[in-house]
Image 1 (spheres, rainbow, N blue to C red):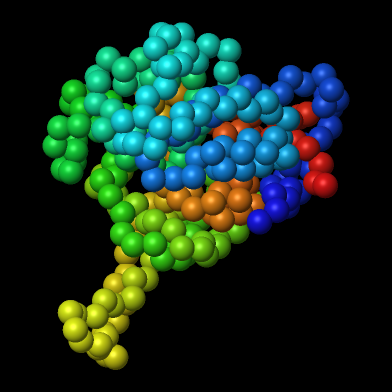
Image 2 (image 1 turned 90 degrees about the vertical axis):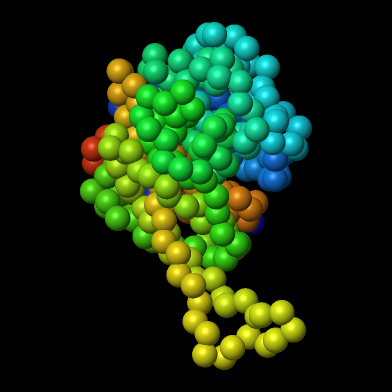
Length: 289
């Protein structure tokens, strides 16, 4: 699906004013991606191109081609790994990376104030212990969930998800419309932390499955599942801005203009560059092509 600069829309166009765009430094964005179960080689290109087509941003990609659940990233070995970036996008799928010291280096940067955007399988990364149950705030294995603002443990089958923005007054949601995805994974919600604010929910209908060697009962009804799919969070003593969405399993979703608009607006908000009226800071928006 071609990447077009569409629905970020009038709110973005209105922001191209004084100061002149040439005088505004592009946002420095770090995108960390890799690990299990997804076509990250393609999705990093889609995200980089899609974001840079919508706002003045330089997206630097750190990609690990390791397709296991133990993918790690050399950049996190440096305690100052986030220095110089305006916002970090976590697009890892590293469920079995369980070294507390490694995860603490990631979280420390965000507690100090570096904003974050978390996509899809980032919600299922860096977890250990009894993470199938609600993890208490302050627990040794709860740090990643506290940064996210929501705890998820799994997902159902791939079916379309009906997205509804429940907080239309929020700057991220302004200018965005409800939509229905292609086949996607709806992540469950074990708990939404008090520091988080829900922006959008998803509704998924799963067709009934036939019993072994039997046809599907024509009277059987689909199973309905509902979950939060986009939210914001304030993390740590500095109330660092965090935006997250569980959407983004398939390439067609990541390439969707509506998804790229959502991620870009979430990125702007996290970086403190999205006004209360939903317009980006002057000089950051790009004209539609």
